[in-house]
Amino acid sequence: MNIIKNLLLILFLLLSTINFAQTTADINCASELKTIDTEIKSQSTVSYKIIFSQKLYTEKSFEFSEAIIVITDIDDNLNLDETIEAIVAIGVKNKLSKILAFKTCKAVEFYFNQNRLNSSQTDYLDKNLLPKVEIDLNKSLSKKERKKNKRKRDLIELVSNKSCEKFEQLKTTRISAEQFVQILSKISADYAKKTQKVYEMSFEESAIQFIDDLTKHLVVNCGPVSELKKK
Image 1 (cartoon, helix red, strand yellow):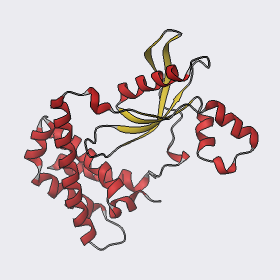
Image 2 (cartoon, rainbow, N blue to C red; image 1 turned 120 degrees about the horizontal axis):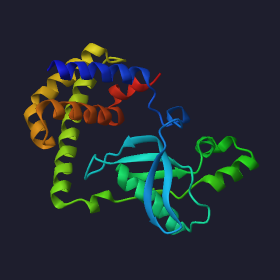
Image 3 (cartoon, helix red, strand yellow; image 1 turned 180 degrees about the vertical axis):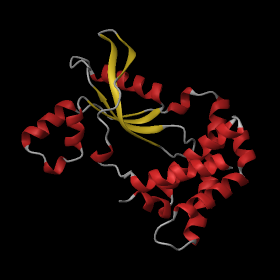
């Protein structure tokens, strides 16, 4: 229980100090550059960085994310299908089902400020914006894996909804650290055995992963918790 409470306190502090709004303030162009193999004859590898990502919550799974990526060395001579193939390879490797891709970080900045661009900046964005790609990653999973993901998704949503009801009952303008930890540690403890079974991990591992998943879901879907991320 102490592990859960300590983790919840850390998450509360992060929520209170970080702005999760989807703006260029969240974009980390200093993130690590990675390389991935492709099956494209004219370009066997591409270098990329994930500069923003967040979990997607669908009816089937909470396992995958949407992301903004920069592919720094993609060949301008690739055709559309080959470019999409490179983006899909990155998505599959990183469990990204929705991808907004660019060639440069400057293009990302321009994308989020399109109403303020001059003609040369608009041209730059057009030349450095890559196709937006959506991937049905569930199709690549076995029936067993899909069922497991669905069970995790249902558990997270169930506990998130119950937790949000508790937060809403507080009728306060801003949740305190004590309230955040108390409510989530209590309700997480109530579902500890089920969490361990659904996640198929040890108690400690399942608790840590579940709390992280639960908090991310609350940030998106629960008003009182969403307020914590606003500066």
